[in-house]
Image (cartoon, rainbow, N blue to C red):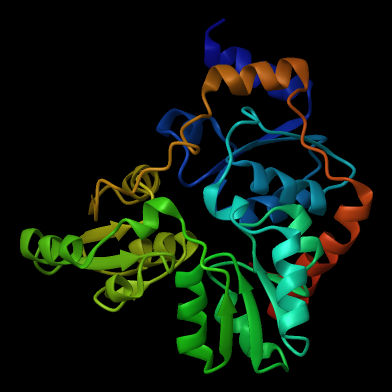
Length: 303
C-alpha cells in the first residue's frame, strides 16, 4: 500500500473529510476532498456527515471549523502553521477600540483568532466584506486586522473605517512595479489581485477579488492569460481547473511559509493519531460563533 492509499484508508476508517486551502502545497490539494477558501471550507465541513475534519491550512481556519462544527473533531496537521495577520490583532485591541469609539460596529476579518471574533459584532470574508459592512446601520466601523482590506471597504461603502494597521506580509510586499512589469511582459492579460495588497497596487489591477472570485473569473472569462496577485499556491488550482489558459504569479514575494508547513506525512499522522486537535474554549466559542452567524444572516447564508 502506497502513501496515498494509506491516507485514503485512514480517511475512510475515521469518517474524515480532508480540506485544503487554495494556498496549500500541490500534493495536499490533490489529496483533498475539497479545495477552497477558508470560510467556504468551514461551511462545507459543517454540512457534511464527516466526524473528523482535517483542515490543511493555518490555525485560525481550523478554529473557524471548530466554531461551525462543535460536535466534530478538527485536526490541524501542523499546529505551528499560524498567520501573522491573524496574530496581529488581540482581544485587548478590540476592547480598547470599542472604548475609544463606543458607537462603532466591530467587524473582524475571518483571518482572526477565535478570541478576537468573540469580541466582535460580526465577521467578514474578503469576498463579502463590502456587502456586510454596507448592511450595517453604523457609519463608523472598527475593522481588524488588515489595513488594506479596511481601506478597500471604506472606498466602496463610504463609511469611516478605523483599522489596527495589520498586514499580510506576502500581500503587503507586492508593488506597483510588479504590476508594471506584468503588464509589459504579458500584455492583454487580466490582472487579478487580492484586496490585502497595497491600495496603489489594487488601483492598477483589473479585478480586486478574494480567492473564490479569482476561481470564478478564471473559469468564466474568455481571456486566455491571467496575472494572479495572491499567494503562489493559488496558481496550482487555477491551472488544474483551466488547462487551456495561462496563469502567472504577480510577484515572487507572494509566498506564505506557514501555508507550506502541511505535508502528506503530517496529514496521515494526524488522521492516525487524531492529533493535533484544535479546541476552542466554550466561553470563547459561543460569542465567536455568533459573530460568524451574524455574517451568514447578512449575506443570506453564503460566504
